[in-house]
Image (cartoon, rainbow, N blue to C red):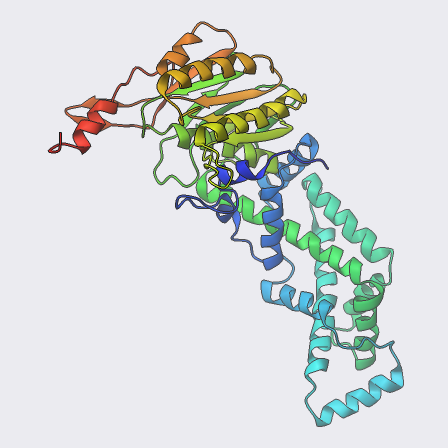
Length: 434
């Protein structure tokens, strides 16, 4: 399995794990798993996108399946098994005389250590039998990921002494003290890693069930079409944390550069984030906040959205922008198929410098047809400079002044914005002072 390349700046820009500027982290959308270790696995999936098309599709197929089985044990029982496996009480080789002596002794006094072992062994026996039942009852049309889990369960149980545990449980539901000691040694000493491996299968099922539940409740697309060609389009997308947000459609209609224009507060940055989050989640194999999506399998995703100044280095915002653009273009130059997002290039300098610098960067981007670039700008002259260039396509966020009101429908349209609302916003906000 291979993974998508990215960096801390991109994860911060997209608020993958930690929200900035009061944004919710993306992980929180999928964190309502049924188990604690399911949460840890979901975090691993969402912070480590894949770039292996078969692995992505395998996850998508499992999450979209309507007949996902329930978990074999509840959260408290699974947590207890995890605690029991880590329990540091001395593990003894089973001995019938010792077991009988210990059983007699425990009739006379409470033994907390013995409670942990007895309950841990009993729950682990139940776990093995529930997993065996899940394997037997899995339908023929089950997704490949679940079939692989079932095959792993079968191999683990029937190629080890765990087979004896399953067979005995069918005959005897209440194991003796000697059997408890025997299986305790088997579970915590001989086959500890096998038991942990079986538990990991449950957490994969937990993650799939959680993602399926989120997709159904929020109307997300479970299975974006992943392709090997640079064909990126998305319909009915929205930022997942925008309450009542407008759904929009977007596709790379021409070339490998998309220039997004629009006035301040029209929603350019949110739109860029929404598209990039959809691409990110698609590479995690998770549902995307859209109606449908066709997505190339990228080697890397890099963004430059919320770029900080570096006071420690004495670096201006303008210099930070230049260095970030240089950094991501070096990724493109390496031959990787990248999605690169540049939000409001060169906002840290004057308008003329920003215009000329944007032209120069755009000329560089044309050299990397194996990458897709999404660029937002409020410099309309820059967009119009490339209006006839067949390497570029153009979208804008609609906005207008109507009846002396700023109207911003957050609608994404093809073309270049003609809106000029900056002076109106200044005049409106500073009314009475001017």
